[in-house]
Image (cartoon, rainbow, N blue to C red; front, side, top):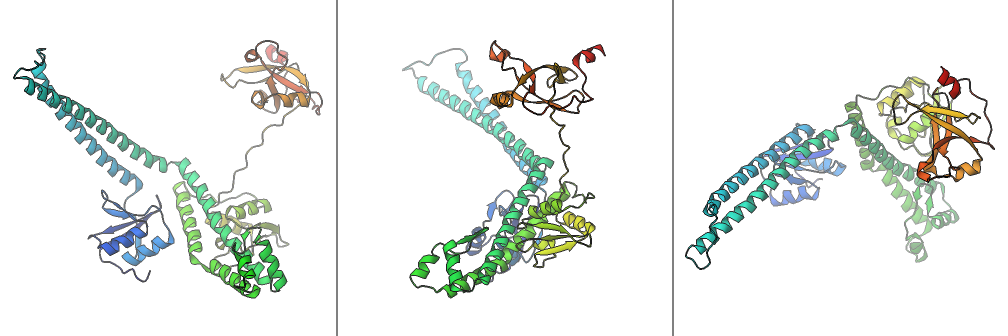
Length: 460
């Protein structure tokens, strides 16, 4: 970035809403500067009179700082930019509609020559004038129709622009965006895990026999530890085994110390904070801290095979084969951290981890004999569906296609029972009734206390 000089009158902004960097310039760039701006992926937006990059990267951030001196928060929101674009499109539509009206009026005026029904007389002195008028009338009608279509197109785009802005800011889309950010975060953390583990393997292996074994294997659990042409280089004498070891150690150290990956992690964490704030913030978990919860939390951030253990102090210690994510340990490099329950809750909140809400377990599927079983109707609210029970073996039930078998919730809501289309029905298949199933070779459960026979239900 040393060759990029700061230019007076250039302002750089970043918008977390769309993750884009923008450059505003008071004057036109010269050809050399324009080429550099384009080389970093910035495109000219003529209507907004600015350069915009499709997404943030460390290189683009450095470039913006170099050319503008600093990066400020974007002054316009996504909704405001959408409203401005919609207004421009509506203006285009109004112009096209006005033009269409003028063309149709001109065509109507020309059509008056033919309103009496007088045909064009071939060879008459009026033929040339009449044909010319007809061509102009047809051309105006055609251009008028095209202008009307263009007006409808611009109006459609104006509505679409605002709809898209609302869609991008909807809670469901924002929640999906948060999931995608966590996926990207794990990707960068997985790369860092691999480099740390690969470096450990090469540093631990000093003998030539061990180095040869690593070259033969070529990779570890997390990925490759030697380039594809390593064997050739050794065979042809380009490099010795010890030189290869030194080369690999230097390469993986460089990868670990490369600040760009750590900047990506920091950027993704900042975006997660922003997106969660727009959803109302991450609520601090007050539930029980367990080993399973902490391991799930660590995996969500890309920790390599995390293991949580409760210590004698009552605190939980979290360990990982590779160094833990830096956001867990205040930027330090370590493979274990021990915190109190309160500190774990605070950490999960700080790094935007929402503890999953445990879903209520479905009622158990019971297998007991009954003439009929009942379930709330799936199609008519307030009505009850009654199923006659038949007996089948597990093998017979398994042969029934999955689309025509399943379970239903009892009317008491305390248990479920198996159902299917009656396989013994002799008539057309589409007329076969749904029936409850008792599996004769499965464990028979006692009749639950909440079960009410159909006869008693009618009497009640």
